[in-house]
Image (tube, one colour):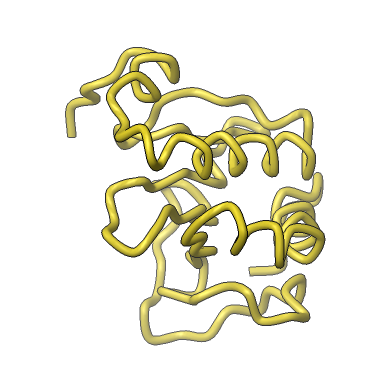
Length: 134
């Protein structure tokens, strides 16, 4: 896949104005959860790297809101039929897509505000220095 955007700024400039507040809030959430996560463009979206591995990506392409996808990069094989061993989501905010990939859907700023603290906790657990229990 060829990246359309060379920078996060180019990505943001191309987004519909109604999605920008949610995208910016998710960017802030990731930074709050782990300030060491480095933001860059990967898969045509802002992605966050720790220890050389992309571990979270903002996906703004969906019709129902913006998703923060938590994953283990592109080098670890995922099993879509297996359950994850991740225990850092006590409130059940994540939708699991495989054993190593889940997403947090945010429909608007009110939705994010309602689950802000729990969402920060989930992302903090996922981006913990030892890596997620996945």
